[in-house]
Image (cartoon, rainbow, N blue to C red; front, side, top):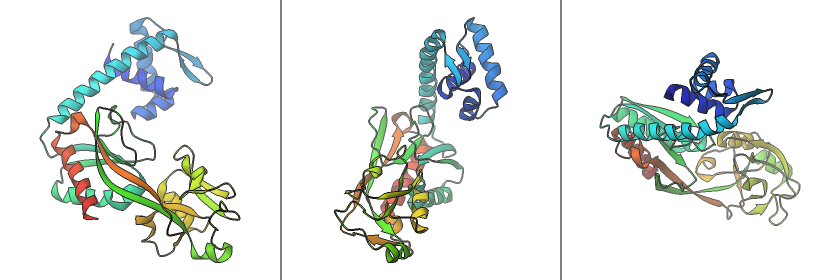
Length: 288
C-alpha cells in the first residue's frame, strides 16, 4: 500500500469524516476523498460505508486499518530514530503542554532557548488533552500525568498545589464557605468532566454536593479568568493565583497536590534539538 494514501485512510478511520480527516492531516478535503478513492481502486475493495453519520469502516476497512497502523508504527519509528541521531541545534520541535503550565514557566523557558539557539523552531501545542508522543503528535510534553508506556521516558519536574480562590467582592457578598457544608449556598467554577472528573465531586478535598456549578470550562486560564470575574469559587494553581491581587485564598490550610513531568519518546532522547528544549524546560523549572 502507498504510505501517503494509507495515512489519509487512517485519518478517515480515526475522524469518521472527510472533513475531520482533512483537519487532522492539515490538507484539503478534496485531496482526502481523491486519495481514498485511489486506495480503494488499488486494493479493489470498499473500505468505508458512506452514511449520514460519517464514514463507517467495512470488514475490509477494519482489516486494512490493522495493516495501516503497523505501517504507521514503522514509519514513525524510522522518523524518531532519524531524529534521535540528528546532532543539529536547528529544526522543528513540537512541545505539548497546558495553558497554565505554559503561562507559569514554559514560555519563559522557550524565550531563553531562543536566545541561545535561535535556529530551533518550537511548535507549542497548548491543549488539555494529552498529545500522543508515540504517534509524533508532539516530540515532548510537560504534563501532570506520569506516562505508563515503556517507550516514553519522564523526568519529575516539581510538586505543585492548588487552592481555593474567589474575588473579595464575591466573598463580601456571599461570605466564605464553611468546611463540612459541601459549599452550601455557593457557586463554583470547575473543569469540564472531559478534562478533569475529580472537580465535579470535590475541591481541595471538600465535597461539592451542595454547590451550584455556575460554569464548566476546558482550559486552566479560562478557569482562572472565570474566578477573577467573580462567577464563583475555583480551585486554582497556587503559584499562579498568588500573583493575582484580585483573588483571595479560602481555607489556606487546604490544598490539592499534584506532580509535573517532562515526557519524551526514548527514540528522541539523543536528538540535539529535542534535548536542548528539554534542558531549557528543566533549567527554567529549577530557577523558579
